[in-house]
Length: 494
Image (cartoon, rainbow, N blue to C red; front, side, top):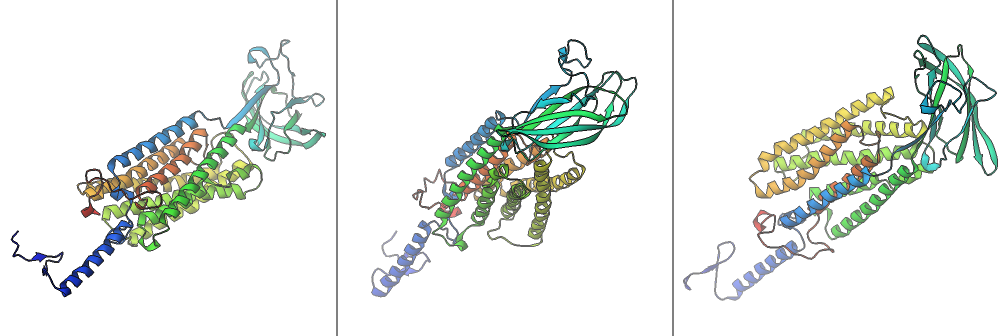
């Protein structure tokens, strides 16, 4: 460049080689630029929002974090798949014949009839504790050489005694009537629950049963099956919730410490929702979960249901709004008819979901049912209603993911943001839909695998959002922008 040509500034204005006025102006402008640079170095972009990992972290680090999340979920599947079973059952037989025969012979070691009040069937039940939640006894009679199908209302006399260091204590002495349906010959009759105890005051119970009233002697052999919740499974549930609660507490504290230097106004939309996700995650991990084994009543099962639904609702509204922001390329959230509809649909799901999960939790606490969790008619209707609404929300989310792909594709800064927003959401949605159709999601027939996987999934999803939108400059990390080849976004794209 020719030395006679004037040197231009950032706004294409000539700058003189000397002169106090121009030098002062230049000095002020330089000072202003330095201030702007200082603001950016504190972790804010030029539009005033906080600089996040997704904008400055390397693609390699993002991929490594994704692999770590996948490994954590795989470990959760392995741990849950090898976890303890939900229920313990022990079966006793009245006849106790060889080869499990239901025809009484001289080789049988048990009683030959349940109709004798002078010698009722007596059995000590398996040892129980507060972690057992309940214990129950199911009865399956067998017909006694009948020539035609028989249906009869049979009355059973039931005596339950609790045993401790002070001796025997009568817990219950009553009669109960059951409809018994039997086929011909020595066929199996219907199964019914004859004892169901939810309040456990003793570790050992002894049961005496005999038939006190029946029109005909059509019942022969009987199978008695004692059920209780597996103590190891209850301990496993408590351990999972306690561990994840501690991790989520550390996460939310670290997030608040990392964000303490920024005003709430400068928080991005994702960071504001991240705080809501952290809080709902802490509730979902349920600090009070273990107390429900030490107390009776409806309140703690209700809280468990409430906390679970709150996280699902927070996830739903976040996913719907976040994907729409990417699809519409919005910088600021706009509350329009579409946003109001999202809130209404998620709100209806929240109310009905709390009602359903509370109903199931309280029913299982007061009157456990061995078998499908939706075997009650009222619960079944509400289950299908809530499941339909939630599946519609999840399909809505997947539809937004599909609609956003062609819009974000080709716009590097937008597409990468879309990828790190959509992938965790898609994995979460597919997992939930699979659990709903498998009947193992939430309190519905929960087992060790579903308890571990879905609770860990909540935490992994929140961790993925937290890592993506964590403030780049924070007390735990020095400012390292990396090379232009490694950064997700170049400075002009921020």
